Image (cartoon, rainbow, N blue to C red; front, side, top):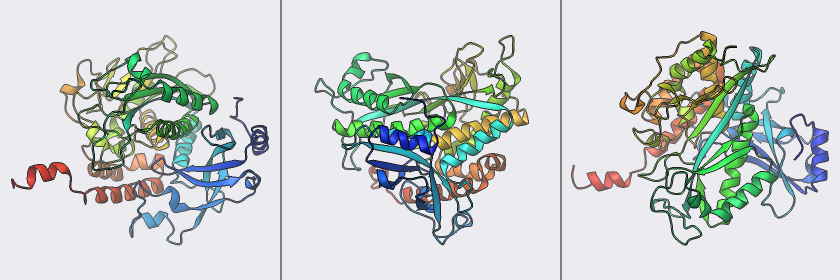
Length: 455
């Protein structure tokens, strides 16, 4: 597919005509990463169509609930005012599973004065990337996204289980990096790769991860906003493909008890906007002071950012000792037990991998938050702790253990809020508080099993 990075609206319309599009899905990612918006006939999709949505559409949680009172309404108007949506022409993609020729286009959210709505996830990432640009820095990222294929599950009270593959059997053991285990789902992944090709998604390799039915897809490195869009599209694509093959794809952080959780590891480096050189390396190839400062920022601010990296009560079940997920913010070279890893690489490819982030995180929010931590590290010249050269699982927990604890830390961290935007942090924490309260109303099977007759 041709490059669309500098598309304007006239070129977008030419693209739609070239692909004989009859309908357009106008998409807006909400705080959860769900695609909200409207579907328009091709003839109604014009630059001056004035499409609008209530601003609360991007400011609600996974349960669809809103606060009744409180700081949320210092940001969100109680009058239910509209956002003005503008298509980003660079995001246009075909919907490959649609019966009629259909396009999908991601939109940015503006207020009536033409300013970006500050609590919309895409706006937050744009804001952080703008701060990097002001310093002459260009972030480069590459996500690795894990997910599970599971058998169809229509009863939420029943545990999830691995799906049946071509052999007619479900996985009963862990098959890390097994080619044969991936081949069990060849028909599904043929569709996934076909869909990704038609959508020009920047995917690299597919591997089988440690868990039964757990897969990982890697993305080529690129600029943050475009890759966040691709992760957003990819999640939608895999779910759709899985449904067509009689199974579910889930990005829950910990969907199956006793199996490893799913992460979204994000590799990140910074290049000079003027020279194109990786500022994490000195001219002689050694790590630069910016490399260490970036790590220092991740170490200092990641605990406060955890509600953004691990956004649900389920997220914290993944982060436990000896389960291929970090429990602290130690850093190390070529060490997968730490939360912040520096992979083996050439000087120009030197990068830092944030291993804390869950697959359930909103890609826009997660990328904005990890870049914000590194940005603050470089701005404040924060020195990291000494490198961990051993097993970080033998160290102490340094991350919050629950969503409630994480929300408290996020509310207290004013420097991170200043980078991400005060209004975004207010809306986000208020919504997550509602989700947490909803969860606390649920009585789990564990409580009935162990407490019913014994306490």
